[in-house]
Amino acid sequence: MTESELVQLAKNGDTAAFSKLYGCYKDKLFRYAYYKLGNVDDAEDAVQSCVLSAYEQIGKLKKAEAFSSWIFKILSVCCANYIKEQIKRRNTDELESYSDISSPNSDRLIEETELRECLDKLSEKEREIVYLSVIAGFKSKEVAKIAGYSAGNVRTILSRSISKMKNELTERSVVYGAQ
Image (cartoon, rainbow, N blue to C red):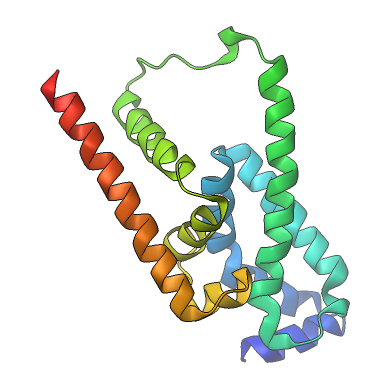
């Protein structure tokens, strides 16, 4: 059964069809939310909110072919809401609540932190395209539909963004290597 057929069934109230659609997208949705939010719990909550909202609103979806971009736009809004919550939490959290950086996973934590810092240096548009392309695994045509750019523009922005990140990581390794 095609995705468009599943969407049509889901629009008509078929929960099994919606469940199959979710199954097709759950990993991409989670990866996108995780890299956007940086926290497994918040990513899971954002995906859950997204899926619930999508399930409730699927009848409003006009074109079945637009399901992919539609659900990621919903997830983007859910992630934005969780980012606002994270900012509130950070302002109220005690310093003691942060985990010890000298844990056995500290190398991975350092790498993730460096990657996040590189991503933070990109513009919001560049980050969004990197998240959708690299993290969620969408092709440039799919990213174009979601982000509202041409496929060629997406490829250009992605290429420049990755180049910026590589340069930043290279500069960091030179600085760290010199110490």
